[in-house]
Length: 143
Image 1 (cartoon, rainbow, N blue to C red):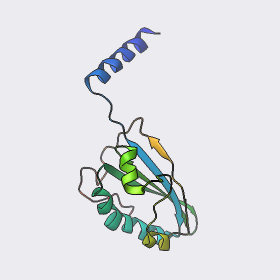
Image 2: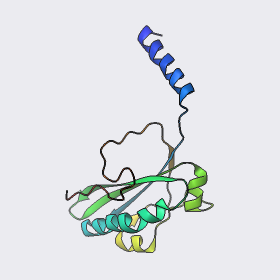
Image 3: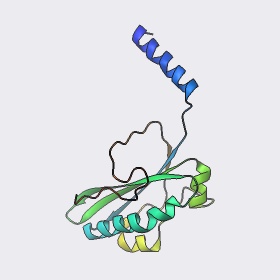
Image 4: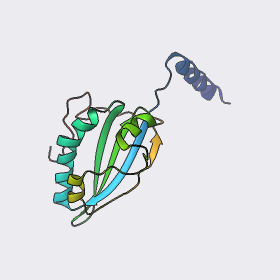
């Protein structure tokens, strides 16, 4: 191993011993909606789902992403963060791979995934994002 790499690896090992990594699970889900449906879904998520999720033990945050695909088709990706699969199960029930889609959300979407994957978060850093720190506000595309 090169000296610089060996030194970096040694400092990583030391840092791990001093501050163990905290595990986190990312649950991802995707959907499609019209542009107005997307705007309405984001508002529904921000005003209704965010407070509901925040009340669940083990919920650590959420991000809603949008990507225009065509004139009136937007791809939506929702990532929710959880402290463990046990916390996910408190939200999703005994089959955590099954999507949880509220009736109000279904009415706004043109299609959505019925199943969701879960990922271990290996690294995360989000700096300067509105809504971080519990303010309840989100990043808006019109700002």
